[in-house]
Image (cartoon, rainbow, N blue to C red; front, side, top):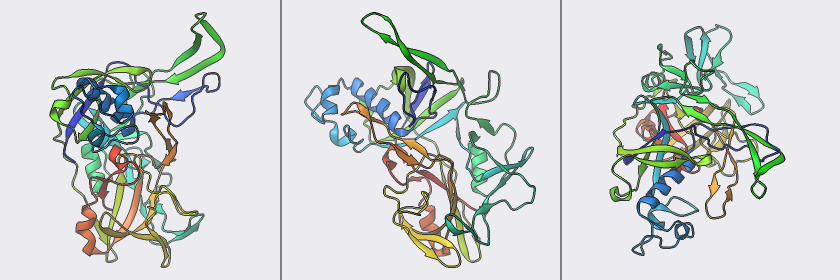
Length: 392
């Protein structure tokens, strides 16, 4: 998706709420979500635009004309209920100018410096979800550990999409460093807060809370591609903004977006086209999941049994079967209701890095390739459900 690239550089620690309740006196520890979701980033982007245009924030929240000349931004930038014609890609982490992306969950470490990619087994196994071709490793090396919490360089991800489980030195980094001087893209900086009685200027009993903001390492940026903005709506030179909880400072630089994603890759086996959808951002595929249907199956797909359980359907013009998936623990994601001044309802999303294994007729190759570098599912306009196509 073409648009402008918004580059956010943290000037302080950053704190982004996750789905965990935060109540002083009740919550002992609150981690920061990092990187944030597109819901958070669109708030910072729209605030920067409204400030640059000298718009009336209250009028914008109510969906009324808000510009000094009496104009309205509702159709183009939405209101408290949506983002209008804006379309976001990301946010993604960049380290020294190169994108670093969440490691796909089908990548496992089978030994020191040795990696393999999971793939659906040829024979189905009965489990709590039915009779499925569960993902497995081909070798018999024993233990295999997923690379949860790690990020990969673009070159490493390109090879993984081609089915090559080869990670070179320096192409994998933990998201959060384990300590000072250890490798990572960011550091936790925990702190304790205390509620204060503003009238007496003294503390309030039993109202301690602990949070863990993150400090991105030097050279690490948050980048979001934004489509639908006019050039005169934002400053042409770098400018400061407030980002996330506690209104921490960041510097924003808006440039042209010239990034190119790796090309799609597909394989074949038993006369079928074999591909996987690798999600770079969290995804929610069904707003009303049917009982017994896995969260990694879109709601328009139908259940079939031909020797094993699978799901058949059409997605963005591509007709295919979903065989199985590797999905992490669901993430609870909501957001802030600008109009009501409170938290939005939380929903469960598959985490970034989730992988869905699929098969299709070979004549669907062009349609499947069309799924590459697209966004599907709930809140796709905010950047959720961004997927790349790889082979298995």
